[in-house]
Length: 428
Image (cartoon, rainbow, N blue to C red; front, side, top):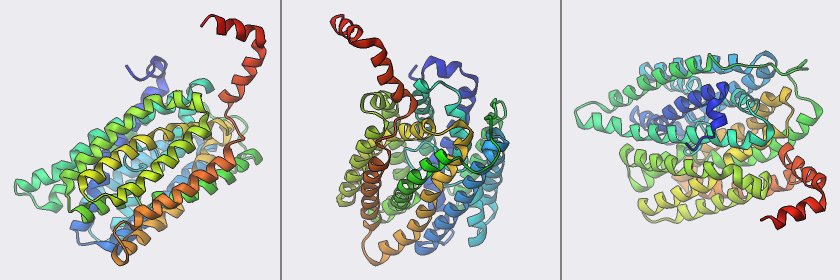
């Protein structure tokens, strides 16, 4: 079994894995279904972009609320509350068709807040509550492995969910109207959201000690200032992808939900494999170096993808990029939790992620406008440019702060002394 035995034996990790799996499963098909459903209802171009933008803004506010209250009042209750709202949002999609109500449904259901293809449902309003619970379930030396395991499960579940994106087309081929076919998927997502809620109930939580305010400490603010800067840059770049990437493939290569569902399924399966090596890469290179090297490579592949002349080539580059980018995700999340005090982890996760969500909310409208007035590849070029800048800044502001497990390693070596190291070398 690729998931470590200690993870499978850990009570909290079992339920957190189950909850992530269900969220990722529904995100897998919703990332394809939602944009196409909105297009089917008659909202295209700038209108589609504005719906996605407002949904991102609403999701950002939900994340902030979870982060500011989770440290003091509990992360488990926050996860249960968000799961209940997500259930309401999925059901709302079935019955609403106006612009304003589609925005509300998108916000409640956290659609588009799963980190995109390969993200495995990592982001969104669940994030500030889930991340501290994962970090608190293991000692520091196992933290990278825990985050890699939950990412691995999330991405595989997302891959399985992406395969269901073919269902609307299959129903349409049997005489169903497109709108009705898409709404079947929202009923399925509502059932899954209820399962997610039930998985959150058994999670055990020991409240952090010394939390007297919802605002972070001085050290946490130091982390937040640096994290906010890099996340603002990364979020603006990521916002040109996400659900807008589905629209780009649809318009650029004239492919439907079946082809896109197949591509995103392959992407999620491929993204799962690097998670198995993420902890080893962080141990070998160090967390910050591992994150920046993989991020820069993934950004370069966005440029290549935009130059691809066919769907097959663009899809192949997309798959390679997803696999490389996947290496950095659990390391990045684990690193932030590792350098942050437990009593402020939810706040740092939420406030640190807020700049990325704010800047990402601007990108869909800008991207759809540039696709119509300049070139279809504009979102990819801009995404690559801002991600290059992000990783350069990330390296500059974090390279001197190591997480606890990396700080302890040199100390342990020094304690052994040169004689012990020589003896160890001789035995190899």
